[in-house]
Image (cartoon, rainbow, N blue to C red; front, top):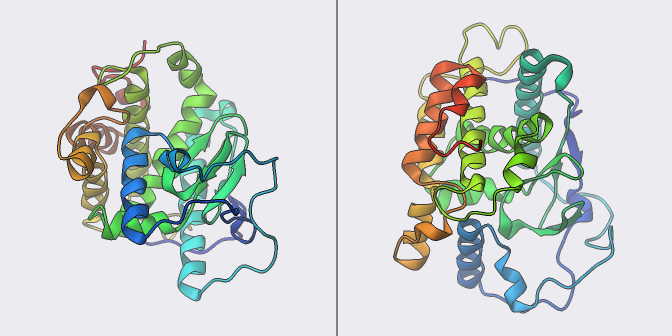
Amino acid sequence: MRWTPGDRGDIEDMRGRSGFRGGAVPLGLGGFVLLLLLSWVSGTNLFTLLGTDTESPPGSVGTTGQVNTSPAEERLVDFVNAVMKDAQDMWAEKLGGRYERTRVVLFRDAIESACGLARSATGPFYCPPDRKVYLDLGFFDELSRRFGAPGDFAQAYVIAHELGHHVQHLLGSSDRAAQDRRAGPNSASVALELQADCFAGIWGHAASERGRFQAGRVELDPGDAEEAVRAAGAIGDDRLQQMTAGRVMPDRFTHGTSAQRVAAFTRGMESGDPRACTSSPTTTR
């Protein structure tokens, strides 16, 4: 991918104010990774089962002070901002006055969001009450090493997917889906996740246009799309359940199978038309 660092106007940097509180049950690295994977599969913060989630008033989590960082991490922050800005510019062009800009909140380990206490183990997420995307940059390392999906466009896909949830919230899709209490592969929650994958593909389609880098925007290089396809396939419910539990449990699907996620992203990537993202068999009515 080709991109240019900006003013970080699409970033809310909370890395210096996040961290774990006392009272947590100590975990070895293996145990932490296992709970990380299980939390991602189930969509539930399983660290609560160990008593690591105590109720805290807003703003009480973490510490303030200077961010301990590195040049590589700061370049990653610039990358997140470039992707977020470019994707938001695209949605503003497509939705006009219906689109409202948001930010990516960067944190480490844990943070108090409008959706409650959130930990890195739950992965990147969108919080409807405050309309913000939350991301611990450490997830990108897990995406590469643990899930086998390296590459900058794989990372960009994750950001664009979460921004897709913001678009759904603005269009009212999230509220309509919340009325559907079904679970499993035909649930409204799976339909929303697949639509967010498709929305990520919509931005990928726009970013693949030639000449964008010269115009100061993000532009994909040949082969970038394959990185996103690998990422979508790597975090399908069936694959993650097989990795962690040794079997597939469709009644616990929250994001769709690997094949469904790849198909949804590809549909958006090939069409560039948001209307193509309503054609999934599990689309919320």
